[in-house]
Image 1 (cartoon, one colour):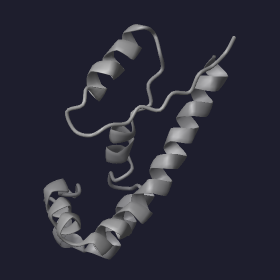
Image 2 (cartoon, helix red, strand yellow):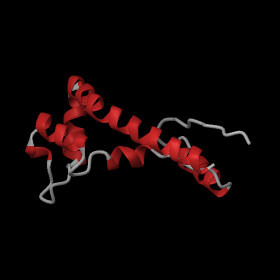
Image 3 (spheres, helix red, strand yellow):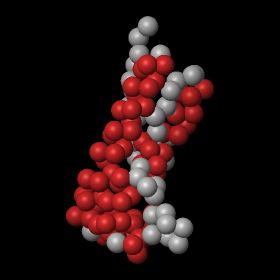
Image 4 (tube, one colour):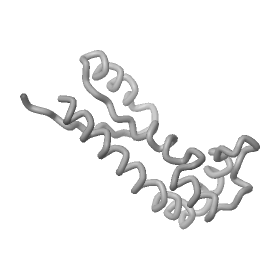
Amino acid sequence: STMFLVGLSGGIATGKSTVVAMLRELGCAVIDADVIAREVVRPRCKAYQQIVHHFGPEILLESGDINRQALGNIIFSQPQKRQLLNSITHPEIQKEMLKQVLKYFVLG
């Protein structure tokens, strides 16, 4: 049997969630980069430690989680900080996506 690997991208409010829901309904395995991006920055993850190191503890909530709004304010006002954040998170996101692709491939 043939396995297709399809990438779905698009801007905000372009219908990605609708298409993903349809694909799931058809029984397709879905790897969601947005979900993975939130997972790789959780405490005890490599990216989390690097982000706190570079951006400082002031971007943390009392719970120890990253304050996404505070971090967002920094990276949207300073392009070089956005590049830094991407250089920390993108390799971790790509690694996790590849792991999931391999898992689904093995599971058929």
